[in-house]
Image (cartoon, rainbow, N blue to C red; front, side):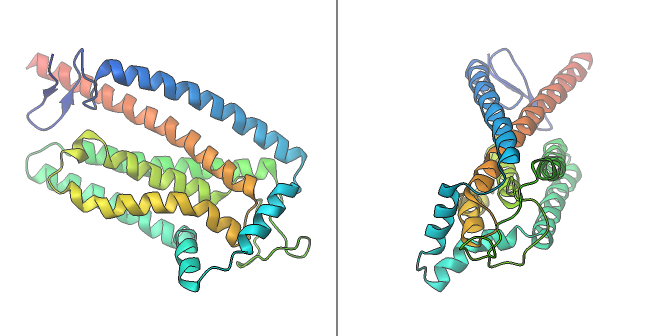
Amino acid sequence: MHSITHSKGTQLPTRDRTAGGEDRRKAERRYRVEAVFWVIGFIIYIIGCVTIHGHPQPYPFELTTTETVQGFHLMPWLRDALVFPSILNNIGPSLIAMIIWVGWMLLMALIFHLRGRSPLNWIKAAVFLALTVGISYGLQGITELLVNRPRPDPHHYPIHVYTPLVPYPTFPSGHTEFDTLYYGSLLYLSFTKPVREWRYRWLLIPLQLFAVYALLTIGFSRILEGDHWLLDVLGGYLEGAIYLFVFIALFRWVTAKLAQRQAMKMQRV
């Protein structure tokens, strides 16, 4: 059975296709595998939080990692390129970027509405991005306070801290967690069916490449700048991935429920 698409662009689920346009059997198998990895990751994350809380001082391998990374003789332009995602992640630039992305999605929703097409996919994407980043940012702050690991201090350890010392705990790395959620959400949305079928999807390729670049370099930059230890960065990646998959699952669930509701309306017509 082929998938059914509403005249206004809403993908209706069938026995063989999900509301997202995926093969249902393959999708269900993939969801089960994702759930197993999520549980494993969550257990590792909890163990890590408890362990770091009980031993807040940096482990020898973390100190060695920071000394090694900061000992690299990087050319100025390369160092600037590596720390750029970290600078972009500061509160001011990241808030501006979020407002631009959410505003652009809502603008696309308005354009679709004015053209007589359903704006639901764009509205749903804007809400997904805002809630994912906003709620997870709050949860990350709570985790930092509970674990309460002191930030790297150049007065106590033979390292350099190239940014102003802040009185906030360091585990997990907020910059790393934020980038994992922020760019992970954008990448996920950029590969959903409505975007894949968008006429101008090729315009997103540079942004997708930058998202991958930021994800790969944010952890390294936090160590290079002396703001975080290695386990802080790994904890940030893991925490971000855990929250990201929860919100992706909610996004899929909402998509399915909205599609089912649309199908019921069509049957009553």
